[in-house]
Image (cartoon, rainbow, N blue to C red; front, side, top):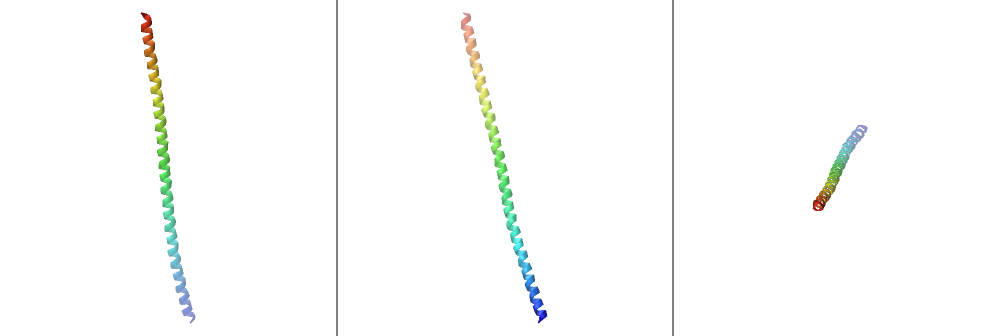
Length: 91
């Protein structure tokens, strides 16, 4: 009778251990998926931030080029008017 109780308790303990391992594996898998999702979101965030910095840099460079072109056109226009003035004043 005592041996039978020992056998039953050993069987129950082995089933509990097996279920515990299954539950642990399930949680490890669930946490791994969460960790993978977080890692993927972090990478996406970093990619978008880099893309945003690149776009801001491009916008800055474009604005700088537009400013330089306007300045250059203004200097050329002023030089043309100055040379016209000089030409007509010489007569």
